[in-house]
Image (cartoon, rainbow, N blue to C red; front, top):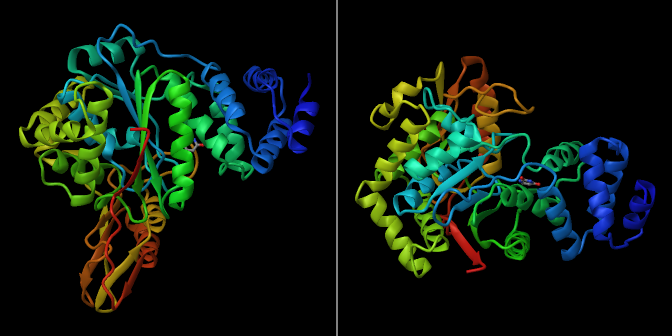
Length: 434
Ligand code: URA
């Protein structure tokens, strides 16, 4: 067996055997396959696709390419949640405490921002003192004692994914269902939870631009999860416009806290209650999704979810005073309001462009590991369907003074204002695997 033959087989539309896939993945991790051959195979997969069996085998090989977390000492059904990435998506900070308040142990590994999409780890680091680098023993201890912990994904989980993702990123081979599904599920399966809830985003601010693609991905993810022995379900949710009103790290922490207090924007509240409800059901604390949703709502109304958030922050060394005083997270150097130039209604608001504006403000990163301005970002005042009048504020950008003009120009491009009122799309579009 050699890489030349494997590339040739896939190039000509052949089906890779389990042995060939394992050979590729182990060679990638061992460093014995040069980047040009790995990239050639990825491009062949991109064009010729993989069938389900190949995709499952690729996922398993990638899962086994690094450490596999053993969470068996934590009692209960551990439920993980993964979002395929979007703009303003702060749901982890909301639903993890909601599910934990309902008795679901949440042991979650999350990622950082890259490009126009945000990452939970950067957001949590906006809370002074909050530690996202935890030893596995401390991570497990926190889940046992508080029912919740969130840490950064370690470099040793699904090692092959890191190498392959970096190559896909620079060879225009990201957008392939099998490569996306295996990348996501290899990490989720290696993270050790018993059940997995996937939030597949659909719309301009997501990988999956339309509902058909989102559904295809959701079905593939759920099938892989189930075949790998995990209780798995997916929700397809809208990412045509940003989720909530806040985009940017500290801004999103504040909005997550407001949502836990029952004062959050409608879309983020609706999605959070739904996702937390599904986690509660997947974790066996409710007999149906509906009952899970009721329990999730109750965790907000009773203050139990907010209490759990406090314990979570304190457990990881963070300043829980941010719950009542957001200024403890600092303030941006400057801000700039973006005003409407005409009267009318917001007919669309591009999540992708708002994500880019947030990136330009300094809240995100274009290259891995570059620093982020935790107080930068965009606060939206108007979303799709809202009435605006000339001179009224559409949104405000925050960050270093020199970055604001570019960010504001991008915000302006994100808004379409017209004469006719457009109904906003419903936030939850479909469920798969329930
Ligand atoms: N998220 C991942 O982790 N991998 C992909 O390929 C796409 C989204």
